Image (cartoon, rainbow, N blue to C red; front, side, top):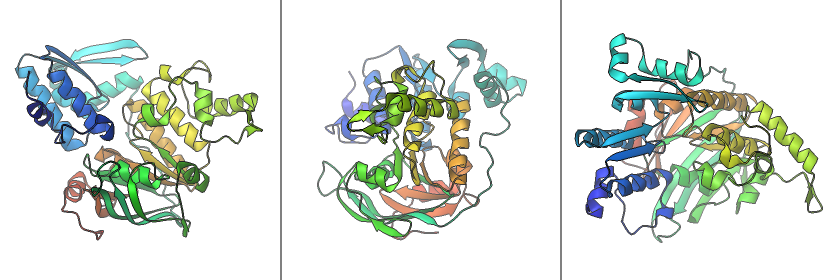
Length: 397
């Protein structure tokens, strides 16, 4: 059996091997899974969304590993919604829609045809051509809604270790602001700590809503203040997978309860409204959430938080692990929320996504904000420079 250190280095995970997996982010947990699989001397390796939680550099490292395994005679099946990665690494592609195989084709044959590989895959996945990956919107930005100043967050289990240091940012009404950073930069830690201190210890700094300082000692207080947080890990933090759609949608807003009892008919009516408006594909709102596809699960999570009627929505990897059709629907929803005057903060490992949906993007490196750029002036190259820059406590603009 290969040495543990060698396995971790091979998949690009540079963590203390004694660190509990539960303390790692979703992206690093994914790398642990892959290292575990490689430890078994496999001949067939099936990877389900292996790069969903990884940034571009870590994804490319993993794709390079798959190419090495192919040269070693190991067969790899990769399931992914990142079409560029499929185009770069696959020898043959099979498209599945609604549980049925649409088509299978050799990638080299497609390259020789001159037709766009991603275009063909998208057409097969959604049943039609998509002229644009991101919907257009007219930006009308208002007054500042959220401001975070000099935010510091300590690691929850390692005293003395700081995971977010001196972070300051703001989001205005009608504005979509992105946070970009490499894995381990502190993006999720920043979001969760602001959302009622759901992560971290020794948290200091100030949160302002509509220009007024607020105290958010817990998640309940954050919700009451008008903040919603869509977690990067919907299965662990966003949903109760053994409960139905109805219960999940109303779980963060119990205004339907009276005297300890919930008005069941009213609850079903609310859930039906969200099922229709969010286009959740399910036989009924009594369907168990664990039986839904990833895209429909994400729509349930979004419905749950929209039902709390927040002023600020923090969306952490909102399109992770869902197909291009569902992604477009969520991008459209983000635009709609901004048009309603909501302040939207989007965290994503996919730079093209941030460039496509945001008005302004902050870069985070090693827990510190290293700069911000208007989306109109940002490129993947400029963002990567900021994401890998030596952190300083001053935000460059």
